Structure formats: structure tokens, C-alpha cells
Image 1 (cartoon, one colour):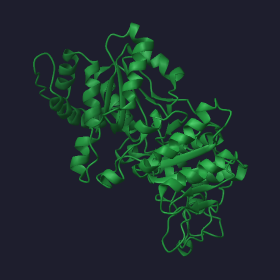
Image 2 (cartoon, rainbow, N blue to C red):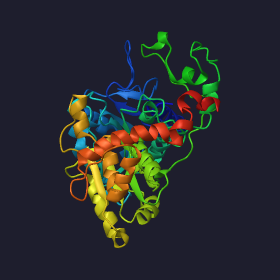
Image 3 (cartoon, helix red, strand yellow):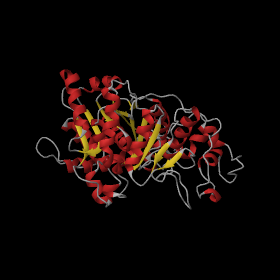
Image 4 (cartoon, rainbow, N blue to C red):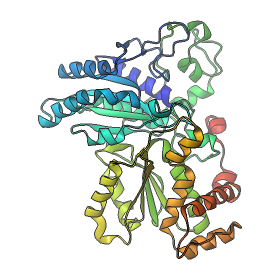
Length: 442
């Protein structure tokens, strides 16, 4: 399943259950006209309750706000996170309506958007993230998903929540069957995005029996893709028979990799990078690094984070792709120090994007947004110099020191060699199966 399919099916599920009574509002939502998708990523394609607003993002905020005042839940769609910037006065009013009333005036609405960089496509008008702004707005809950399973379960939870919820998903992963980990050769079943919803496996195994889409390869594709002759906006998304979206709740993180030597807290698009860098360093050093997907950015999932924070003794990397200026993860780091700093041996680090718009060129994008080599280099700070020299010797890399430590560039060069060496020797890569091709037959 793709994130865009998960979002569409979650919206349909909520409408069928009577939890989404005022529909979905945004630009190009209906998907009418030749070749129309329905939403910028086809996430609202085939939904009769998805409606077009005027070509102004403010409408996608005002209409759900008005509906929420009448206790009629609605969803507003911003095509890209960047387009949300002219709505913050409205979003502030929405959040403070619920917040200042102590919840006595609920605001059952969701504003959802795709966010983040995408391989040099979109630049500053399509590649930004708005997590800094949304975490700072009173009254809002903020959700960021990294995989289709969470996209389905957490969107359902968000729509049922009486508070306004901002729901983000990475546009770089929205069209992939799982997430970008797959395209990077990470064939490990415990990686985010590889979990299937109950009933999905059976639908993927069955040939199509839908009269409306008989040429689809599987029953799953018959339900989730429009036939060639219905790509004029006439296709209607039906509920896949046998599919179940399990209950979930906001404020719960997910541990993706256990470890006690250090921990990475991240979300969204950067989760596969965090997992792969931590896996490689753990395999090469013998010291286990944990990785946790926050899933809910506000309120922070402290209950799930606390055991990892305490075990790490301060060896913590907070990772996101928001700009460094006023990055909300600095506040999260400060709160960690206030709560748990008495037991720290060092202090948490924040790795984020440069304080610059994302460039149109992929080469420039890589200089601005964290890459896996940057994550690896930051995690090296959790180890002693002797351990890094031993690691380098093991993989045949001449690691040159500058004084008592190593330059950032030198550690990034080490990362390139280490990641390739790990893929060639780590059993996680050499023995696991590719779930995209074989999970449905396992």
C-alpha cells in the first residue's frame, strides 16, 4: 500500500463510520476532468465527499473551522506544506478557540498536507516542512507519519480527536509501496512501512474479481486504482472487502530499533536514514543504537521516549528536516535536559536542515537537507575516537584525525564506505527478503 492510498482509504473509512460528516476540502480535490488525480498526490481521488475550494488555501482552513464550530468534523487539504503559509492567522484562531476554552469548545478538524524535499523537485515552493510553525501554535496536535500503516491508523485517530490536528506525510514517500527504504535496498521486515493492514495481504494475493476493474493484476489494485476508461473523474473509490484499519491513538511513538548506547528520535521522511545509519554503526561497533519514530510531534510521546532517554545517558540525536533557525527540536532537547539531565554523560544533539530554502538542484538540496552521511557522522559522536579508528581499520578506510577528533567531511567519507560495507556483510541485508516482492507470498 502507498501512503496516498492509505490516506484515501482512511478518509473513506471515517466517512462510512459517520466520523467525517462535513467532508474534505481543498484545491483540486474532486479530481474532475481528463487525467485529473484528485488531490496533488491522488489522495482524495474517487471520494464523493471531497470538494473543491476556490484557488486559495485559506478556504481549506476556514471551511473546516466553520464546520468544527457546528461539531461537524471536516478535513482541509493543503496541496503542499509551503502553501499553508498564508493561513497561519486562521490556524492560530482555530487552535486558540479550543485551547483558551479548556476544551469546552472542541475543534474536530484535521488540516493535512504533504511536506518535505523530493530529490531536487519543487524547490522552495514545494519542499518545505511546517513542523516548526505548527508545534509552536497553541491548541494543535501535530502528527507526522513515515509509512502507509501509520498514515491509515493515525489519520483515523486524528479525525476522531476533539482537538484540531495537523497531519503531515512526506511527499517523497507518498507514492512508494512502502517507503524509500525499499528503493535503497533495505529489505528488512521490521522497517517502517512494511506492515500490512489486516486483510491487505489477502487482497494482494487474490486476482481481480471486480466487474468495474477486471484487468487489474490483483484484487488490491482493482480497488485502489482507477481503470483507464474512468480516469476522467468518474471513478469512485470502493471500500476493499475484508480490509480493517486497526485502532490507534495519538501521542504514541514506535520503537523501530532497540539499543542502549544511544538513540535517534525522528519522524517522517528521515526515518529510513536514521534506521540504516544506526544499523550500520551498531553492526560495526557492537554497541546498539536505538531508533524511535515519534509519530506525534505534539504532544511529544514522553512516556515512550523516557526509557530510551535514560538508557542513552544523553547520547541522543534529534533528527528532522525543518530549518535550523527556531527549530522546535531544540526546545525538545532543552526539556530532555531539564527532566533527565542529572543522569546524562553528554548532551542531546539536533541535526536539521540548513537555515535556507530547499534548492531546485538535487546537489543543492543535498547540501541543505540532512542526508544519510550526515546522520552517520552525527552518530559517530556517540563513540570514542579509538572506536572510530577501529571501525575504519575494519573496513579498510584511512580515517585521518584532526587533533583529538575527526572533521565532519572525514566522517561523511567514512559513512559512504561503512554503509556500503554494511550492506555487503550485515545479515540484515544479506539474508532478508524484499517485502515488496515477496511479503504477500510469505
